[in-house]
Length: 255
Image (cartoon, rainbow, N blue to C red; front, top):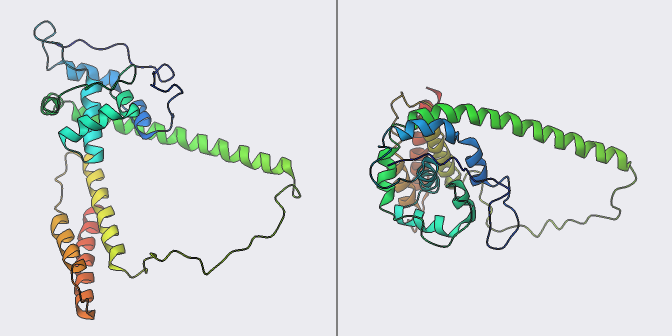
């Protein structure tokens, strides 16, 4: 049985154990504002009988749990633990107040994935529109803050700044700075290209996802790190492998 939950939690009214108010720019709060819960409610409800069986979890609860799992790359068990311990995650799931009790069994994640299979295409389309509107509003907000800061600086005048001498010690620098030619930079770039391919694939569900060979690329990189003696030939071969993986990913991104 499924009944829509019309009482979505109000941001200001969400109750926390130590008082105070949620941070409006927290990533889970932002996601909760971006997802059009009411618009996908009808699609989600089509898979249920309105009069028989136990009442199922709301679409916000089920989809919110899956978003947390996929964004943090967690197991079902770890997802349940994280939600139990995090105030912002419980707000994303539509809770009215924070609770330390278990909200669901990890096995429920299997049912969430089955129930939301037909909702994902509709969600992708709606979310793309919501995200574009959010970027526009964020850009306007940043422009207003920039104009306000500039106006405050003009009002203070040229002689109202801090006085004194700034001394910089150039010898006190971090010792773990990587050289620009380090193979680790290539590995980081390859991983970023894989994340970009994953994002583009979600935006274009009709396209076939290209193979990135990320597992082989990581194995090659870890194999190089475990070498005790890194000769020039070994460095050149490892660098060449990562460059070829990266070149393939860039070609897929451009396509």
